Image (cartoon, each protein chain N blue to C red):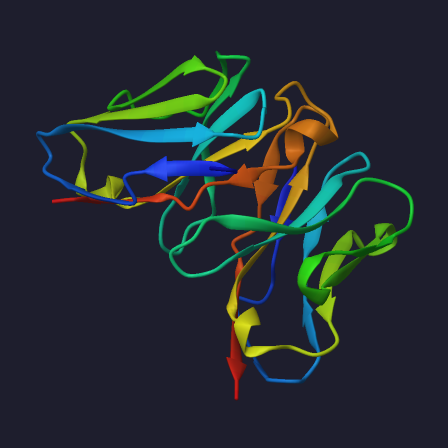
Length: 112
Length: 117
């Protein structure tokens, strides 16, 4: 069975600073990989996805993520964080069976 | 209206009540899902419907009863719930439920916050 680990429960960064959220997955085949964001009181919104091809994927709101097969990682990055980026971020791995497994989430706080 | 709409957004019920959560998607998707999101727990998949047939039931207690009358609507009927059932219930849809990339890209609603007293 697949699994996802987000090692950081909570991250605080200053506005304008760079951001990297870590995600490690476990799956026997090439996975489908996703990052979702959840603002308070809202559902999850897809930020970006990786299916195949270029291992650096661009998403909405200036986010990008890099798939590293050798490290089983799919870390999310943003060069300059805005106060509106404060939210909870979920990494997910999907399979050919159509099942997505989510990590526990990382809460991002942005300091002014 | 576009996307995935969930009603009600907030619901408070006693343990002996019967209530229902409703989800409607306007995306032309063929698969719909119920997830439970509790504090300090990962997202839990409860049910999956593909083309109105239930294809997944993750050992969910019978006090939760899903219904999918057509590919655009999904209900979660609730009865004799317990306080530990208090959570955010998220509905999602995907292009298809049969597997592959189309089944994995989920569009979520804003959720129904349920409190059981």
